[in-house]
Amino acid sequence: MKIICVFLVLILAVSMIGVDFSVGVKIHGHFEPFAAVNFDTWLLGFQVKAGVIFATDSIVLVPGFYLYKDIASWRVHGGVEGLIHLGEMECLMLAGAGASYGFKTDFGRVLVGGELGLPISLPGDFFVDATMKLVPTFLIQLEF
Image (cartoon, rainbow, N blue to C red; front, side, top):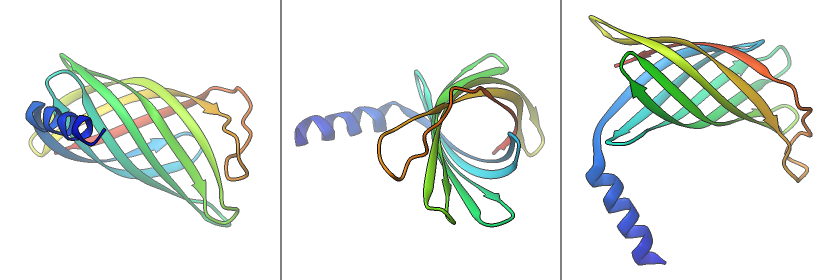
């Protein structure tokens, strides 16, 4: 198993063609600023993000992991994120997919788009039972 993990890490490292950083805002009923690190490979890109929502009674941390593919000026993405409510110590898992249109500026690439999220119910006391309700999201992101 150790050899397989080392082999997969080496393949990923060899296929890596770039690392980008980005900051942005997601609006889905709340205002969520986030920072992300993008790893570009020959086939797909990976994004690891960390966002925060300042609620009236607590803070909600929003870590996430997304896969994306850039096609011309468009970026198609899908992934999962967890909304961790620190006051109640509960987590809502959200799977999302969407698209963004990107254009280059003097200071980086700006992506503007949207996403549809679907809550996921997971077992355990830490996870919130979710109803099947779509969550539309507006997204703007600066990648540099």
